[in-house]
Length: 321
Image (cartoon, rainbow, N blue to C red):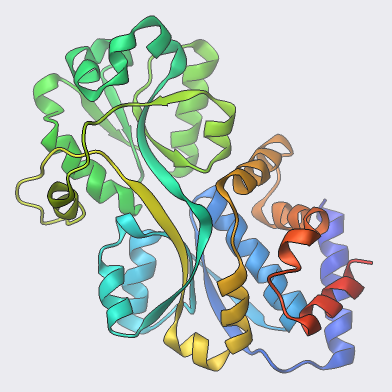
């Protein structure tokens, strides 16, 4: 796979040296610190570089820091896989004309959930609800596995932990340092059929591989949800977590400066099932995001060929022969 990437990259460089394409300049794009976000970025980078001749800079980031960066500096140009339920400040930036929603990059949306393994629910059906979990903390190991700092969901999780009074129910909270350790905790629990309770999201290879049950957190309450999105929420209320609209956004400057790239990003979208398949392939093959992007480019031409313009399609067709 690494040889395939090198060959494609060298071939692409040769194409652009002979065609001297100069339409696209420098473009910066987030590389979010979770698997699907990194894959989206790698696919976009490949298409921008090899199809349009852009010089692409990946900016390692996560949800809240990336939106804050655009608000303060106007960069990066492209924000990939933003879960809008986790970034209420995005609407203000959009209203101010600083960013444009290009597309729903996960076409059918994403899902944040508090979960327990199915083998626990099969043995203890009361764990289907948050009331049942909190009444029996010992059955889930007395610990809630929380998302890493910097993820947008942390703000909501931290507020809901207060709303559901974890401390009063003797439920400890473990804040993971990375998405990798959070995923590893699920894998470890499943391998030894141990208790586990915590946060995860879809689409992911983890939830494709391990059968988990979303804990019923009760009815959705808009007022409570509006509050728990704010770090200054004074009185967090109980609510379920809604399905998320997951977008790619671009800055107004990028849309004006590179209209072809804005069009590309507006077309670039995956279903949850498509992304889960990619992530399952990535995990099975121990592949990097870049290797997974090459797998997608070489195996799913019918999908991405509709995202790009005729000139880019011709260049990539020559590259992939």
